[in-house]
Image (cartoon, rainbow, N blue to C red; front, top):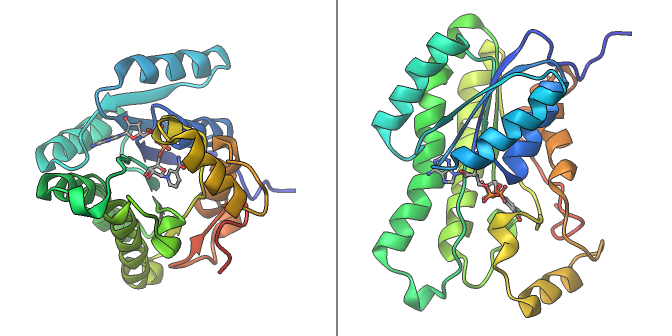
Length: 252
Ligand code: NAD
């Protein structure tokens, strides 16, 4: 039987791939047979450690620092990709930042940075590859949103707005991609144990867990398989969807 989850012969770019959810996606994609490149933001040591760990299993990856919110950085990454990997088949926009702050304390700079990394970054990196995918009549784009796009959270107005924007971006672009066999979908995880959530107070963490039917935070390897589904032949009929592995935190 053909493995419908195989990524053999595919080339993938994962932004924010040096740690956390992105690192699990990089690992699963490489194990599924893809040639994988990833970027990170000034996180060379974690990126190098991930590459070394994967290399022990014979899996070669390509890594580079790139601030996805900066057009010049993204252009540089695209030139590097063209030289190192060639045109990509799969793009996962996973780069992201946190930063809780009550709305009354939120500065314009806080707002702009959050929107820039998540939304501008998703726009810039997608723009660099979308037309080439359309021309080649093949592409899989998966944008990492969050269940907070639906649910919201105190202290995370800017984050929730950015993640809801990613859902709208995904739906709108999917109309332009699907006729050319370029599917665009998103994944909206619930709370996952990563560096992003490590700074949460015990009190907030306990409150979150109490809201979740599953009663615990997720692991990064509980998100990556949903991304693999959307990236592989198994997910070929998903268009403009947002899949939400979230332990029941939000049910839609
Ligand atoms: P993390 O902090 O562990 O990893 C973030 C990654 O993004 C790192 O590789 C980092 O280098 C990279 N990054 C940060 N800013 C960047 C920039 N400007 N340009 C390029 N790369 C940049 O975080 P995580 O929890 O693994 O989050 C990954 C994604 O999942 C984010 O988009 C996040 O919003 C989303 N998410 C996380 C959770 C959670 O509970 N952890 C829940 C829902 C969604």
